[in-house]
Length: 421
Image (cartoon, rainbow, N blue to C red; front, side, top):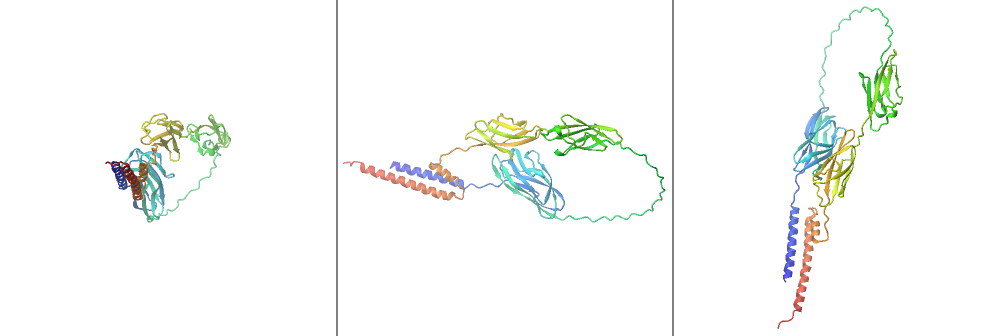
């Protein structure tokens, strides 16, 4: 009988814990959403007018670290986009490429102005500044993709009345005495300047310094300078070497212009080749813990480390295509939050990558009763009461068979006991 009481108590406790867990889960409410907005939201404008609008973050208390998206201009012409100070432009937007990927150093839980956009109205159609592909990211996870557009009514421009100028009084023409005809002496042109020196194959125009009679040009990285073909325009009669003739520009080359009067002028042409612009992270890993997955489009790297790994002191090994990366490869970093790594190219341009270390989930056995209860708790709120009913039925059936088995065992023990005389 004592065993039967213990079994009943265990069933009651399990059922109570399960119901309290489900009630707490079902009572959770969603908070207000963080979103991007355009200000002013509604305004009246005239066709052809230029005005500024600001793009900002309305924070609902979330910790925001990175904001991604693309500006969309409807019946408006973008004049310029200026990023607010204190932000990290992972991918800075422009009128020709309005995609943006903006990092907020140390993250923020406050409202924030992100950029100022200058636009021009085109016609009297309704116009707007909107967004697409919005992603508001916290500490390694998306928070929201909500946004509010700016909508504008455009009225036709009012043309000013034309100004009528008074008709000037007509003065009589003065009497002009004929000038005796003097035959000019024949002039021999002495002009002998180079006015343009271009490499059409590379769309590069040489810079001419007329004071020092020098010409310099920088060609793209990797250009072979041993057989370049310049196109030359001069004010003289001829130039040597001739325009269109291939030349070896490994060392400076002298070009001599001859005027019609046979006088000459020499220009020294020097060509340089631009430094390598490559600036990419090719491999990012934590030795023995995990290799990074590189998203080159968004310049984002994700490294998944085993469950239980302490991410506050990880040492990455980094392979780059460039001259330097900061922080450097082999330098221990705290990856509790995302870390920005900046690669510098030989031409001093840079590219930033956002690196996030993610801890793998702990593997949990699914065969136990508690595991089944955990799976029930992971259901969405729409299915939770159905899961409660099913689980209670299962617990009731299990309890019934346990009690029934114990009763049979007790009866059997009673029958086997000897009669006391």
